[in-house]
Amino acid sequence: MSLTTIDWVIMAVYLVFVLGIGFWLRRSIRTSTDFFLSGRSIPAWVAGLAFISANLGAQEVIGMGASGAKYGIATSHFYWIGAIPAMVFVGVFMMPFYYGSRARSVPEYLKLRFDEKTRGFNAISFAVMTVFSSGISMYAMAKIIQSLHLFDAAFAAAGIAQDRIFDASVVISSVIVLVYIFLGGLTSAIYNEVLQFFLIVAGFLPLVWLGLRNVGGFSGLAQKAPAGFMESWHGMTNPQNNAMGVEWFGLAMGLGFVLSFGYWCTDFLVVQRAMAAESMSAARRTPLIAAVPKMFFPFLVILPGIIAVALPNNVPLPSASTQAEASASLARKGIIPQKIDEKTHQPKVDKDGKPEFDYDLAIPNMLMFYLPTGVLGLGLTALLASFMSGMAGNVTAFNTVFTYDIYQSYVHPGASDRHYLWIGRLATVGGIALSIAAAYAATRFNNIMDMLQLVFGFVNAPLFATFVLGMFWKRATGHGAFFGLLSGTLAAAIHHGLTLPQGATAGIKGGWLTGGSWIAKEYYSDMAANFWMAIWAWSVCFVMTIVVSLMTEPREDKELAGLVYSLTERKKEYAGPWYEQPVTLGIIVLLMTAVLNFVFR
Image 1: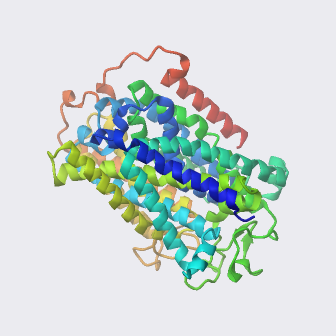
Image 2: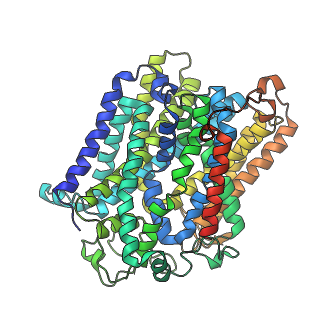
């Protein structure tokens, strides 16, 4: 299926609308609070949809589809144990600390609870993480444009080499996001995220329906998919018995506890949306509202990936255009082709000689394979929306943390609010420029979700240990938190430098401390390596924080009021309707998630 005029029109209308929101909101951005926190005036339902959409970027849409093709239905663990419980926890327990402290960012909360050096360490590491995360979104968008050959005709007419399409796509996409964030700040990002949420749902529902109908429904998919691909918990007793290559403890501890809670409870990218809500009650309900659609997203983004590998290997590759891509000797999994080396234009293999499949093409190829004219334009617009959502979310988090927690704290304190507003806008430009560099690092992975979880393991895993102790143990000190974070990050680096996934060469995927000459542990998959790295980082940070805290002087109780659970006044729960009560909503969400885990066990 190729793009027609109506498909291009749909995508063009979306881009005009996105930029229009930025220009429309431009006049309402008068202060730094307006730019960074939307003046704390966003309704709960809008904040809730923005909360999920900030995470529903290209990393999730492309990455989860790729993980579905690579690991099967076990990818649902990223939702049902790797997201929902943590979202309930942050809504019920943690938002009162964030919102009640009136902190403008997660690093600023760390300053209030611990000290300046802890805030500084987290601010720098978080800024680096958002740059990488934004770069991954940028890479995903450029990969889609290049793989689907959307600009081939235009570049051929202009006499520009086809291998420059990736570079041009990176630049064009970054400029679009830069414009509407520069003009409208967080408010522009939030309202675009709400629009993007509905576009993604509308664009992917036809894809799932057509794909399932083609393979004979769930029963037909189970028969055609690789063995074990439709089982999420069976086989988790041994890493060799499941596609994800991890046992139940590594999954539950690494993903379900460390990475999950570390992301949803401490990542300012999502917390920022709840902090922009109009009241404490709205802020607490924000992640709970987001959890309801979140638990059903595996059916939208994971199933297409599984369908992609369940299709016969002899069907035409939707994205094939070059002779190398269309070669009959090219290894395939359904409509997932073998990855092509960008320098040699030859099929890539790992160090064991096994083909490297380009799982990131699962969703793009499914769109091109199934969707007819018009609907294809809607589907590709949904991908554009996911990219905009992911990149804009990271950029708005980056400019806030850079301005408040780095520039204002260490470079130019005491300046006017107008000055910080302009620094925030300049930080937006700088963040996008750095993200462009990160986009090229993502080319080393055949599943961007593998890279994303690697980045989270370095930053969020040790940070969550610091938060757990800081919020629930009043004896934790600033020195303990700082050296715990430092030790946890170093533990992640050492683990990464001494281990490798099967088939990988030493470098960005690990083994760099010895150049691959000696490996302490070889994991069955990239994701298993990420989970265990996160476990090590969290554990070392947790222990070191306790040890150093016991050796240093704690702060007085009165200084920690409102920052530590045992020293915070318990306010009477909101007595409104049940659907506005955080605890009641949290229990309902957890019960629904338990049912999904049981049904798809």
